[in-house]
Image (tube, rainbow, N blue to C red; front, top):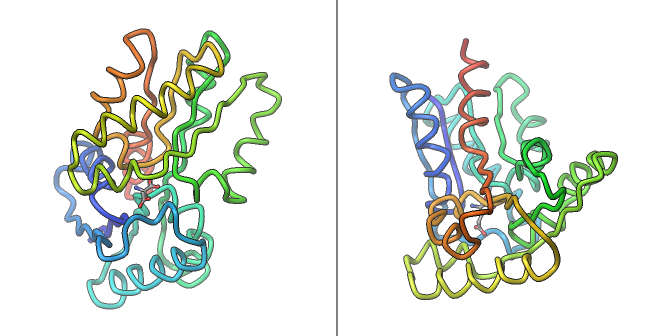
Length: 217
Ligand code: DGL
């Protein structure tokens, strides 16, 4: 059994890709809605929740692989999960900066993510590792957006997408927008409308599914 978790429904964007790639695998999905959103919590809290969910998956449900379908939890906790369960493979999700570097023509890329993800050491290391690419990354913390998606508040989702995409576009000629939170992929149509047709959205679901398939193989 493959355990998949997120703070809420956001990880469904990853689960969708997993199911498409691996239709015969049994998946269990845990949405930690009681403690969502994670993105504006401190790292220790997110790490403690991630460990508790992982413990349940492995010790109670018999999971033999765990997908951390949350950028914020991956940044805060995946190293701790690997330490706690060295025999279990973990696949996390991080803002797809590298794929964005491969496709941008203007060399200016917007990154929308939670405050927690953007402040993490893991994200900083990823960002710094791409300094030599010459691509300028415009980092946009999107407070409240995951919560609006989680609570299915369509008006608020539209308002926040327009506000944050507008803030990114005001800073540069951005042709590529990284969706660095799994919730955001669930409203990619709203984000695309806010950004305009000339902007390409980059989501991490498919690469995560490919990585899981490779591990299983
Ligand atoms: N979906 C999550 C992520 O990818 C977390 C959103 C939240 O709970 O703030 O970061």
